[in-house]
Image (cartoon, rainbow, N blue to C red):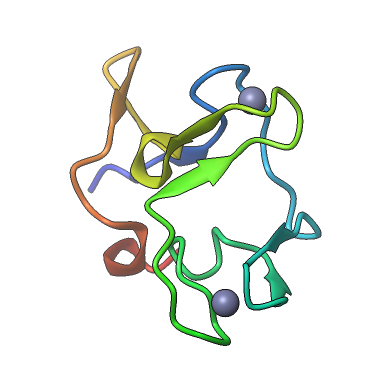
Length: 85
Ligand SMILES: [Zn+2]
Ligand SMILES: [Zn+2]
């Protein structure tokens, strides 16, 4: 069975978030948005777009997840929660 390779990176500049990376919600919560699939763990706000701290561009959260298929990077059609990330 082929192992699925899901990469998380900025669609614009290809910056890769680290486990220590943090995003801020309007409620004051600070967390790693890729741990929760874009949802704030404190107030439950679902962030459909995620800002890259490097290039400052907002991109749809799911655009950050790339699956490596046959030497091409494609946007995965599955949410990462289902993949156990
Ligand atoms: Zn970026
Ligand atoms: Zn919040």
